[in-house]
Image 1 (cartoon, rainbow, N blue to C red):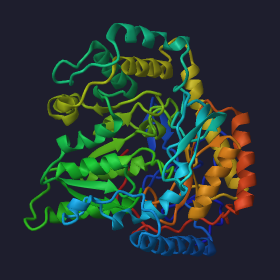
Image 2: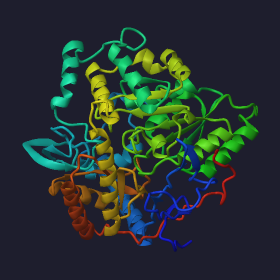
Image 3: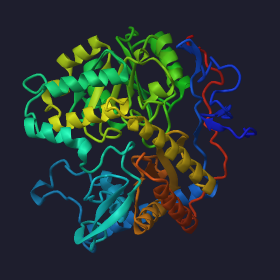
Image 4: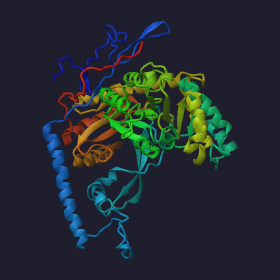
Length: 551
């Protein structure tokens, strides 16, 4: 299907994104889809139209990508043969001689990819940083004398590297300044740690203050905070669902969501990424047929999704998901780790982005590790939900409470965004992040790179595909004092290796232009400009939706 209007295609649907001067969609809002007309404060409101791009690469790119992996695999088997014969030194973990008759603790074949492919380009990951993760940071220089099996530090520091990899969306992870004075005071009074769990002697007044502030910020009844973002998902999902329940999980959900779902003991079914038609098909089957064998009704159906998907840069199609969960009486759990503070007019995540009522979401989860420049996570929603988790959450019972200085840092960050500090700088940073995101994405697309995701997502994946070019790309950028995260299998599909840029409000236009100039040069050198401005034809299983968004 051609795209005559120049719109963007998302999951096979063509979205024309022409806008009026006032920023609203021309004509009436669509009900049977993403756009909806609503009444807010007596004025019509339209949900934002979703504009996302997942462009297909040319055929020859995919051929050479798979060919590269094939050649690497052949050489890997050859090198394994040399190691087995003692011709080449084996640097991997091996079983002790006296345990040769045991079931192997280290599965040799499972480590084949790590041993023979990842190890060749390992220098592009785990680079040690020795400064705050601001718009520029310092990296400790290291070299390897044994082809990346081990590293040694040279004692030199690479100064003022432009940071395009940290999730410091609002620039709040920074060096100490006067705005952090209250954090220093809390450190002097409370110390660094709590040394107890929330259910024992680990609940401080600072935790209660933070939880009340999070609930106010999100406009919900109550919230509970946890010391670790990953554990917020993995330890609380098992408290919400269990055997006899059904989890419907997006295929690109974060590992913490996947782990939490598996630990719960519930039945898990996966739906295609951001595909509401596929989700509805699974919901229909769940309601009609019930549990396997017995066909009894499921105790609960929980939909697990993310606000912004960190590898794709796509934004959740929230209005459609909420319509489905209401129609089929399912519960909705949203992980806003990457979206809270980063999208929406006031930085309140995807719910704010679409102008929806947070009470329509059953479980709001997020982390403080990204936009807030701290650590930990939260779960927010109805008071009875939070009270239940206080008594039944594994994190509340077994995990150490959040550090008091971290709690104070989050309190300071939220007040900054809400304007409770008496300034509008928080709102200005949210707006600056949106401007930087639009500018960077637009320039990359104009250069000819294949850029994934939503046009308003500060997570910007640029597709590299070929494994050899992944390493060359990251090394070339570091030589130009630009730090970037490159991602490959198994974090992405085998043939979709990419670089993931994270935009920050702290980036100046000069920073972004420096990076763009370097990308333009390296893109030509490595022939990475694959875009033909042909959008992906990822078709939905059905042409029409069978549900409507509520008025």
